Length: 79
Image (cartoon, rainbow, N blue to C red; front, side, top):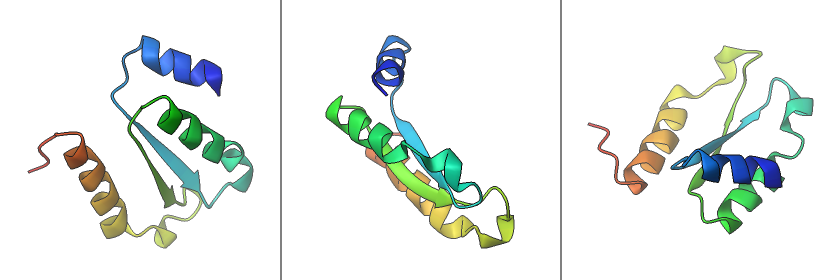
């Protein structure tokens, strides 16, 4: 987790999207730790949920709203 935060700072990443994948639970291990570490480092981040295994479960409207809101909070025009 610390390495990832250091790497993102080195690369001057403006923010991070932490995606919980309902289709692959083992891939989600440690994601909350990443979100906490990003927040503690002052890096804007948002956590969202999707399913790469079964796209029918994805709520595209909710996903777009989460991402749009996140980008607008960063001062990025989404229109």
